[in-house]
Length: 90
Image (cartoon, rainbow, N blue to C red; front, side, top):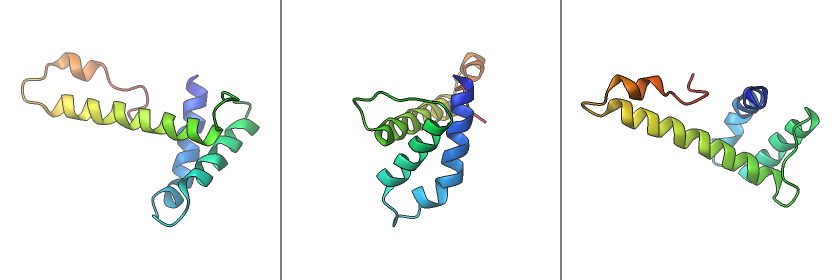
């Protein structure tokens, strides 16, 4: 599973300029990412469009990251918050 996320994050990083340019159609870019994951041997649920799955996975990673940042910036948050960094924080 860790290998999946390493490849996934690398693919998103490679496509980030297109994902954030405001011109490109994001669903097509997520479909490209899903296709590249498929060629690397990673399969998605056949009942859901692979690009949608990739987009959801990315949004979930971002949500974990943002939640961690908010908790760690709160006044009085203990060291236990810092011990539970998201899996791919860096």
